[in-house]
Length: 137
Image 1 (tube, rainbow, N blue to C red):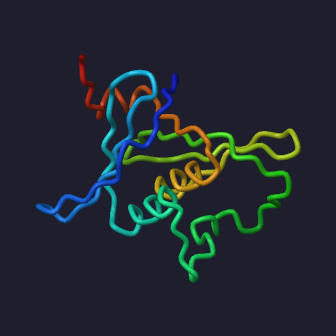
Image 2 (cartoon, rainbow, N blue to C red):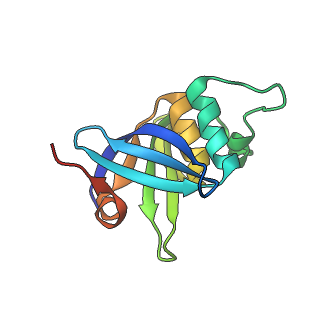
């Protein structure tokens, strides 16, 4: 399936509903993808965007990689997909010593890692067709 490269437009808090939303924007087209999430997930992404590090935060969202040899580990991209149970899924793609691999991870972890390592965020067209808001100039 084809993928579209996106970038983070904003991480917003809705005071009326006390909810958080990550808004991704197409790099080439004017389409926006809202992703609703909890406060913890939103703060992970906000910390990476602002470069804020907490003393008690040893990149705990990278803990899912524990047991993986991260020597010569290069993050290539994050792919956001739509699952059969109507939820977002994310896959972190990386290469290590010339060999490519993918790991399933939570959306907030994947986006935070993409920000940290300047990796592209890719969204399947099917997700955009279902949920994205497209603006016309």
